[in-house]
Length: 363
Ligand code: SAH
Image (cartoon, protein in one colour):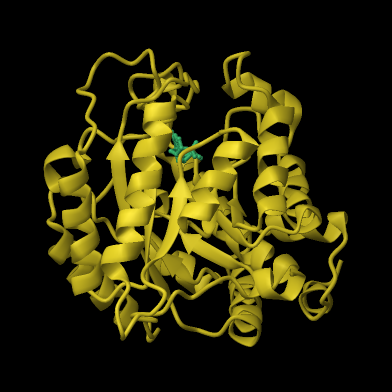
């Protein structure tokens, strides 16, 4: 296969996607990166949009094998921020002129949890709406699998984006990392419901899962395309000490960097194939390389999620080990990220929602 010829295409076969993900030569990887950057500039522009991240509770009823806050892990403290604490974080988002916030938590489906989320969405909308921002802050939810009715209620309350990762589109791989009660088809149905309701829908996968192949990852990208999603968030799988994958922490440094590099290639190839989606440069990249998030932006990502979770509980939201930015106050994270983005000559879309262009092209 001829790399330049592939990179100048605007349609990619499965074999070509696999070929690109398999690139090992540094010069060739840089050609891939630059092609992805050009596609990003052409279809969504070079601006980086901020989504202030509020991890409002780590209480979770699921027991995903890879996740540090899964139900059966008893080695840390469970928290549930009260409304005032969450609103404080939202006010910081407004002070820093972020266009949007993300409310993320462990998974619960009981009515009082749902009502709490509805109340938060409505309150955030009302306090952030004014003459300058007639539509208020954009609100993204990331609270897992819920019924279609619940998703509809979230949407009617004013949330307009939803993140739900498929984790892996290979059903047997999905099964191998989740307990039996988490059903692959149910996850698919959730994504379909979210789209039917009218959300801008984001999904994604972990990269470097035990047993995952390059072919699996190529199929993930093809799935994103066929599912016609608007947003992508993906990052390297990082083993957590209180999970069955703890043994992998001891494994050689090499596999960690391999996952990191593969994650960057995934971002680049996903940009080439999906063109006008919004794509996050995720914190997990920075857990491996201190400059990982800037690198993600250089490989075609255009979204960053600065931390707004109160510093005192941040340590209790460790999905994986080595999560960065644990001790900083939100203001420090804000200044740090703005500096990092300026360092790679990218502009920040302050005060803008920065919605997925893909959403408007498909609706
Ligand atoms: N419960 C919510 C959100 C919390 S987890 C939900 O299901 O949407 C957010 C994401 O963190 C997950 O979708 C998963 O892809 C990622 N994650 C969890 N554990 C991880 C690990 N050990 N390494 C890398 N990413 C992980």
